[in-house]
Length: 119
Image (tube, rainbow, N blue to C red; front, side, top):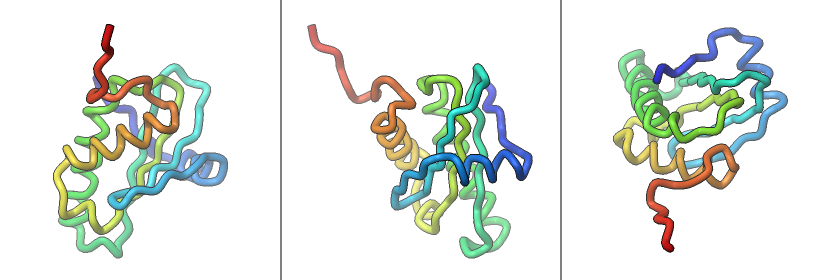
């Protein structure tokens, strides 16, 4: 499933201004409901993180983490994920677990993969 990206500045500003933010040691997630039948992702990485190589690595790690969580996300959200410096030191699996926990607590996904339904 292909991830649809946010590209326009006004989309990012709308998520920043109208959305809610959730903080984690590796990133900050801004979330805003949209009126579409799909969810979109925007990633920002500041120059404070490092040079272009480090910034691109942070984007790749976040994109890989989001792609593992994306099939479980309820449709109709715009996400902007802002990378923090610690993102460079971890793999996408760690970022993915933190992202899924945050999205579960928000209600953007229905169940975590670690939860088992017992009968």
